Length: 360
Image (cartoon, rainbow, N blue to C red):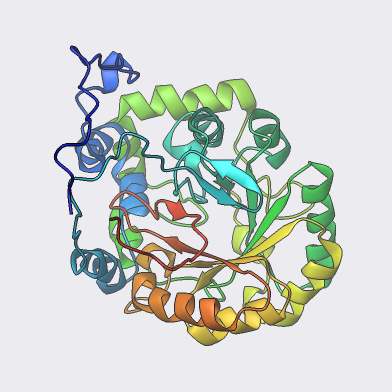
């Protein structure tokens, strides 16, 4: 019962808003969707399609959105929320928000020094950032910009390649190693074919026109990159530098990912002294195997709907995995979820599952 006679603290006579921290040029973008129209104008069609599209019919991509649309808020009111705080702790580190920047391959093709831009932003806002193995900037350079960055690997099932890569990542000072598990075979991205995106890149008249008709990208990203840093290479797939983005032997260099298995995760666990995370799980049974393999955390994800079409959204299996974790976990396993965004496979939510209670 509310005691109306209790002394209440009067509100301040004025409320001072904090000055805006968003650069003036970005203040017209009020949400993620606002960036899409600008991105579509500024970058070539083949790159925009690569970022925005999913696999085959985009059914998995749509289910990511649909799964979230099935949830809503049930707010409790008249509670003092003046001390609100959205910080969260993961692997012993405190972050400003329960989300962050997941790995995005070839981001330096989409913006000049894209991986550096992302890791600086993550450091400035105190959220996690994961560097992709398919990045075009060395993992050592990214680590120097953000000592808290994580590294994500696409691995062939070959110990002779896995072990030197693990050693390189450790030597660079990373403390979290992420193994992507849901890419055993190349995806069927019909969207890429329609838009002219190929791996390796093939110079065709259509591609030349696409690039020439987007001068902001041509001169601000591609020409600037080649002039200042040379032809982009896949820098972080192995212990050594990978092939250039135009290499014809790129697919051969990627190796036999269809041979990657839990035994290789256990191999990494024995060699890697930091935190180990497996990304790309959907099935509750795989989360159990991950814990038994010594993994510190799992990232539930259907690869943003970009790998296997008609894979259900991670949000649909998250409740079962979280419930099992609370009931059965002798050792704590960090359970994270990849949330969908229209421009990419967006924010990782580094929130360890816990019983939620209503505010009173």
